[in-house]
Length: 119
Image 1 (cartoon, rainbow, N blue to C red):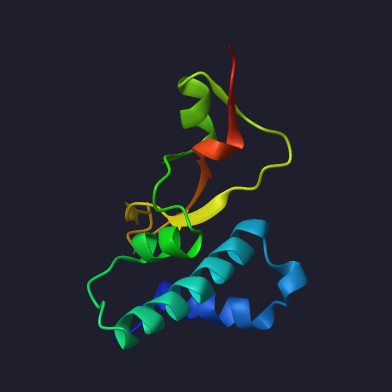
Image 2 (tube, one colour):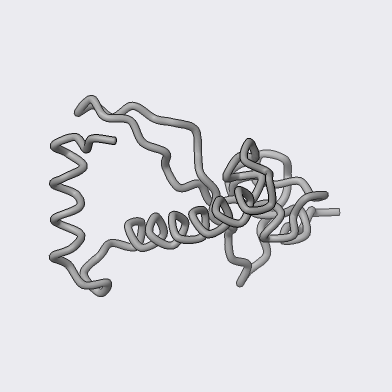
């Protein structure tokens, strides 16, 4: 697999920075990539090669039987994410940047159990 010029620039920039200098989003991406790679290796070893990263993440987070949505999504449904709750990291849909490259953004989702609904 060949890298694009942009990917090379990002890789060299990230290598030059320490974790303290990375933006919060870059730290989330690194964390999610690491988790996804480990889960993908485990899935391949167990013969589940066609399972998506997000399906593996749902299993890892033990969220297979719960509804997930964004903060804004829960607000639109009349719910409020409870104070102190942390989002689960998932991969979003492939996005095309104005510079011409495509990437998968980090998506922050909350489980229904983390949400309070007004009575």
